[in-house]
Image (cartoon, rainbow, N blue to C red):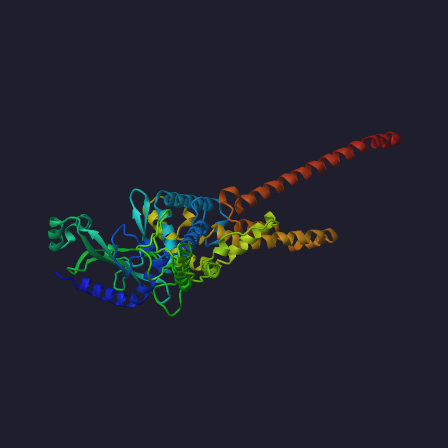
Length: 535
């Protein structure tokens, strides 16, 4: 029986499909030339089909793989920390007990990421970002691995934004075997699906999953149908709701590499910027290959008579002609300028590499470069990717970390928090290699200040009064993201200083008593003489 909710969602899906149509042909061209393994947008191909028939030069493919691998290593490297948690209240950041609990929460999150399939799926997300301009990842809870990540192909998803330009609606149209549909949704399936599963349990059925904000929910009811975000699975063929539930936060992250302010939902990518050069390079390579083939195996000019056909061009081949004539088989000189073609191709390759930030990602080390110059140039190149980092932090890393934190908290995997941490706000700080490289300049400026003040302090000690040693230490520890377990909190530091002050005071009192005793000892002979004279 048809369901009003199913009709409503399918109408919304139709509207989102019409908005996405103009992007699909663009994505298909990108996939054909840059990521052929995902070239299933407007073309539907069978699995295992060869998809490189349009590619004559693989520069764009390698450049896209280099950029995706570099973003993976610079933003979410598995071997280093790439985020840390901090309290919004600065006083709590100086509390040892609070900081140690927060660091234990970080360790729990990193362990959950390591157990899950995060690294393989986030790499696919980066690749979708730099090719299609939009990446979509679904984050779910998992009983065995705590977290489960699934990167979705852009051809499956339909997006919409809220008033702030953030993606808040994700519709996904996908296929699933009939037997899997019955296993997943049980009694919610229609009789039509049951009949299909009996005939062919492996027949692929089309389903729709809609996730969108609920505007008519009752916040007082703690049920899945009253969550902030609705989650509805629909059979579009029968117009039946298979299941209806919800999420406390959006389970999808949908970052965009670049985005125009007047375009809704989808972003643009370096592959789109380089697409004219990519298509031109492939055409030029095709022509150059044909020209080189004609030079290596040129067409032949044969007299119109006097020869016995066919012409044999294989090694050792014999061609018979009428004796007594001067006619010969001669190659046709096409006049092709192969070096010019190769030079023009290299220009297009450099333009493609620049569009994919290859110049910033690869270090061209000269023979006279010192280690310091190498470090500085690397940091400068990483800072050039700052705009990309800012958007990915806002649209990908922040919502992803918040979603994972909530999932782990619901599974009660964190240590019991101290009472002082009730109803406190936690901020996310990014400590990935690229984020650290962008902050290295601040550290150098602070250290350079101390170096410049040192000679002035030799002339006038009062110059040191301008430097707050405690503030400088806190700033350096925060900028360098030093772990909480390696430094002391403000409470412990104050206690140690008080103990040191008391010890110094005791030592001063002891020294004073010793000095007085020594003075009295030295004065004793004189007192005796005075007393003797008086007698």
